[in-house]
Amino acid sequence: MQYEVMNTLPGDEDLPEEEPWPDEEAPESWSSDGEELEELPGNDVIAINEEFYRSLEALNLDRMEKVWHDAEWVTCVHPGGPMLTGWEVIRDSWEQIFKGTQNIRFELADTGVRIENRTAWVTCTENILHLSTSGVSNVAAAATNIFLKTEDGWRLVLHHASAIPEVKNQA
Image 1 (cartoon, rainbow, N blue to C red):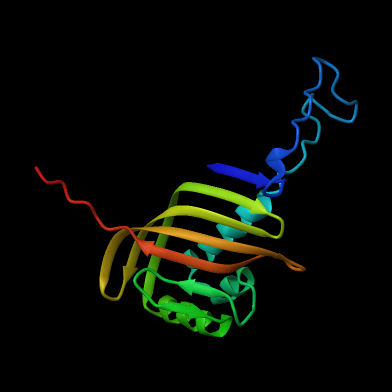
Image 2 (spheres, rainbow, N blue to C red):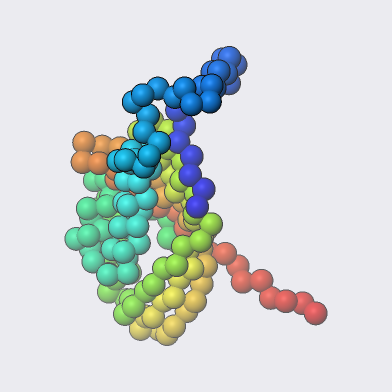
């Protein structure tokens, strides 16, 4: 998994680099013996992204609702679908998807996380096994999930998934 936290602003690369600490002169407040390692700032983003996919697999609208930010400007693009804007419209789309789905499983690959201030995005490849009233499908989609840090923690504000065309071998 790629993971990057942006602690600088664009243009900061012009600032001089900090001098490294000489060997064995790290500040006393730094612990190198493994005691209580600080949690990475991206752990919460990874957790809410996982919850998004687990709520999908559970076909659970209440869980899905807790992942999304409730605003008129949040956006969702399902593979092959139009752009949906506003939580109520997006919620209705999930409700319809859940009604037509008997079972769905996601295996994520090529996952990357980036955080800048109150915005985080996760990119990944979704490998989807889908059982619906119309049959079984196994497809892949390229996805971007954008999260906003709110008073309630990280919340999804954009999910965009595009189907990845199946490449057929030409001999």
